[in-house]
Image (cartoon, rainbow, N blue to C red; front, side, top):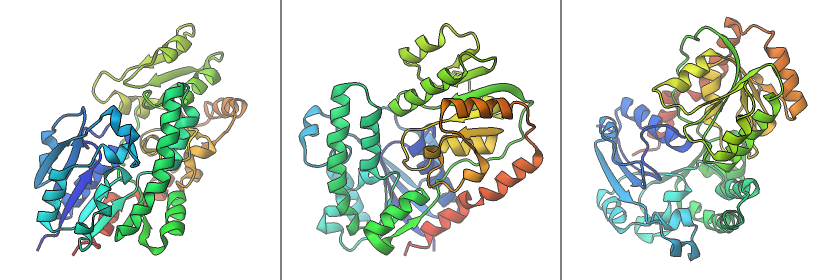
Length: 369
């Protein structure tokens, strides 16, 4: 008899084009391949209903996220309060089945006594109060900085609700250490689900590639750093992002060796990765695991990172670590004169086996009745 699970997602997990939903989408695919019957409940606030999800789920229900200014004054975290939904509660109670909550965002029902006897599993995408404190540090607008700090305080207090779950799945080794200390044996490390497809590399082009979502303040700071490193060198830098803030545009305009690609053509990011000689990935927040790091390791050549980018990932042996402008520039100079070999690629395949989605999906299946 097929096993069945209800999954509550914080956002519509298709297309899989940003960190959190990548994990959700490829988890759906892997569970489907293992024969699990999936009922997906997802909050929608701009991504629309997606027919593609019907390929992997027996049923898909959409719920509007209640984004209202007055909800910022709730004692509950804004990301939780805006996802409270009576119809979702009714459907889950009627189903009387195991539930996987994606992210702390979706866990408002954990405090509800009506769910006491249901199997409740939570996939933790971050230590959320650490993440929001990091956003506050990177943010330049005062009102946003204040919101992030308040949200971090609310999230720190709220996360105690996780004690009501039967099991927690953390997304990185560093976060597993944290959650296992706080919630003891209820937490297990479950590597991120993604499309780790080692495609054949395209003919090499000697450019440095930076890619990321430039709607996020941490990524803006990271892109500005990449520009500052490369702007007065002979090397070409490509900034790849579907969103382009004015500050990035202004910083690039006087430097002919810096090119912006807004990823308007299909599969252009993958093509950029498959051709790039060097990838530069910096972060100022040690939260979760960066999917763009996995993407670069699977689909490109050399990857330069700072310590925070690989914190808790177990992938340090596959990267070149540099933490200052001078160190990064030195490593670019070195790597541009090195060949990326087939042995390098085989080592990546071997060390990235823990990210096998089928093996990791089975860990979820083993918890189901």
